Image (cartoon, rainbow, N blue to C red; front, side):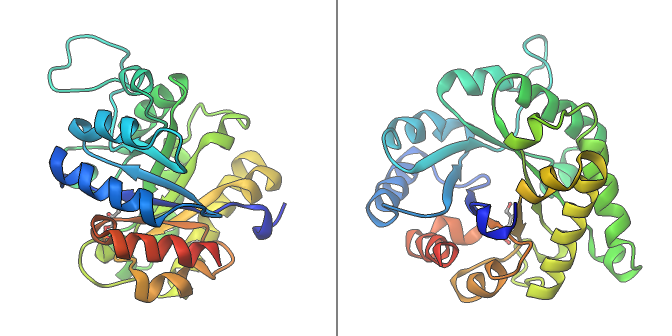
Length: 255
Ligand code: 13P
């Protein structure tokens, strides 16, 4: 398998944005503008918008994802949502290990691994986020950091299950800052992620894996980033909240 055989996936991470009215408006716009994409398109919306999103995207090319899930199937975990609860609603994807969860909510590689395990068991497709902070890049340890995040998160995951996983490389210093990694920087680390997966599961699995880039991706830089050999799509924050911008990024991925 080679790059031509991987289908890019553009996922919007809405983060904690859009109430139900806004969500409805945005999804209705996207239904009009994204009609026949070559790439996969996923909308990762707040929990409270999931039902609206699942309902509105039925029989369209738009898929729905959540932004986190708990590792237990049920129990005394106030405020948490299980993977099974999401799957039951018709949700297909779940973002896991986002740097904002690691930074503000004590997420560790180990808890990401537990959540990922639960997501797979429930039939969800995880979008696993990894990436270095600025000081780690400056110290030259990006590859080590990202490899470790990937390896720990994938503990206990089988080769077959890798077919359902997307890995998103999101350099923390590029998130919401307007600073994008250069296409070469994105390519280098996405390639290292593929290398780490090849070590664990072999070349065939690594070559089939979708590796996204995320961090200030927008219409102006999407084409160049997405033209790189190892960049198979994007995880989009701010630009996913504007229908025209998100649509333009999906178009860049179709080329
Ligand atoms: P921005 O596109 O706003 O930088 O966010 C990226 C991100 O965190 C997606 O998960």
